[in-house]
Amino acid sequence: MRKQIIYTSFLFLSCFFSIQMTAQGPQGQGDINKLITKFGQTLFYINNYYLDSVSNEKLMDNAVKNLLGELDPHSTYVSAKDVKAMNEPLEGNFEGVGIEFAIVKDTLTVTSPISGGPSEKVGIRAGDKIVTINGEKVTGIGLTNDKVFKYLRGPKGTKVMLGVKRKGIEGFFDFEVIRDKIPINSLDAAYEVEPGIVYLKLSRFSATSAQEIISAMVTLKTMTIKGLILDLRGNSGGFLGTALEISNFFLNAGQTIVYTEGLNVPKMEEKANGTGFYKKGPLALLIDENSASASEIVAGAIQDWDRGIIVGRKSFGKGLVQQMLPLNDGSQIRLTIARYHTPSGRVIQTPYKQGESAKYYKALMDRYSKGEYFTKDSIHFLDSLKFKTLIKGRTVYGGGGIMPDLFVPADTTHYTDYYGILIRKGILLDFMNDYSDANRLKWKKEYTSFEKFSKNFIIDKGLLDKLVSYAKERKLEPNLKQLEISKNEIAVSIKAMAARTIFGTEAYFKVVNSSDDEIFEKALSVIKSEAGL
Image 1 (cartoon, one colour):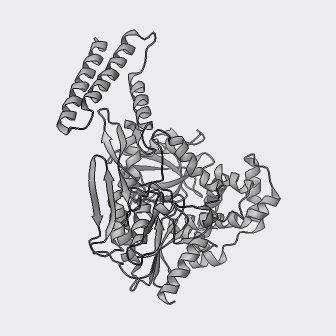
Image 2 (cartoon, one colour):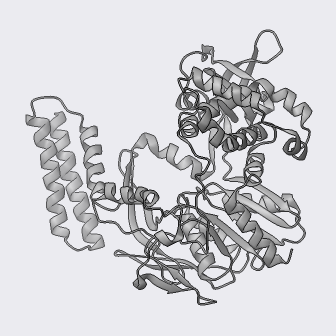
Image 3 (cartoon, helix red, strand yellow):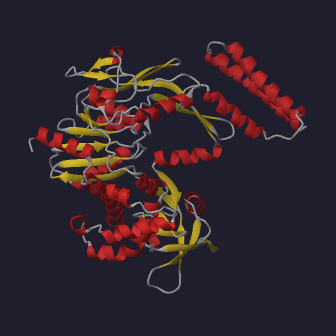
């Protein structure tokens, strides 16, 4: 009976697709119907005649993955269980208890309760250690981030009991937390670098990004914006609509932001509506090799209209439009339906061959070995890919990614294998989580302002020695020669993490930006020059 149902289902599926194809009228309709029937027959035979039992779900998942793998590098399959997790960062919220946390010595430690969230409302504080969840011990069990999410996230309105150990107090506190919607901020930092010069760090293009920027500008109360730096380094993209909203902040009415074209999708052109808050004045966008998709749309529009200067390194080169299409089991396929073009007509997407995703990603990795991160001259463009900007007629290039107006090479003079292992294996992060946990209360009393912290927080030899000892416990043998080469980079990381512990994420970027960040410094210099400062 079960096998008959499977066969009947595929006959129905074949008929359904036949109806759909007839309605839409694509080329090769008859061939598609034959292929659908062929696949249904294959699965039917496997279930009736194969020597062992099989998982139809697994077979189907693998078939869909392999099918999409024969297309472009960005068409993918998303399982039903991964759909929600994938959408959360872009939708701008999730449902849970509302804490930022670190796992310190296999113990869940609150680094900060999210402002206005459920945990803050019941009195949970930074530095609290969550030792039980709904009566279950959660210390010393090999905690991971995924396990923490499983424990703490859940539908809005549901209750969770947290057993908390608080430093300096005997015993435990029990907190009943009612889960709620928790905002996920995409704007990591917004502050005045100097009077009138605003710095914005955007980590992704989520549904709430544009409103976050507007709210930040209102909070800053900058009477006259003398210059603006939008940092899109490491921003891999997000919602197209958000990229349009943010581009609109800087462009005049009627100026094209982006247009898309695809075989089965008509050309669509998006234009600025003229309601932006900063359509004139010095503007710098910061990009690097990890800036992609929506970041490239914004950078391309600003560059093509000569609206601002692009500073950094050539961007990733992801200029394909994906549409999420649902499947009947709650899973989805993320199918590429069109290409992005900048206002001048440039294609953002790096060239690829269908079905050769591995070669595509290898070519992107090879950019490092070819020196593209270090010298502008190592990046070659064909004359056929030359385009002109739309106001000043400057030469820009298509064929993959956005080439900055002001190229700043990657600085690897402080990089060593020792430093790399400290970062990659999370040793430095774990050390700072532990060190910050032990010093949080003292620091907050001692450093009552960021300015005081910035001036007086010193990373001395004693602290570096503690790090080296900690790393040795984690099986990383000391290398004093390499430590000497990398100590300045390590010191910046330590200071930035400490600042984040006391003052939040924004303080992290304040430290990093003021510590020989050449891309940031070049952008600030250009802004000040254009503003006459």
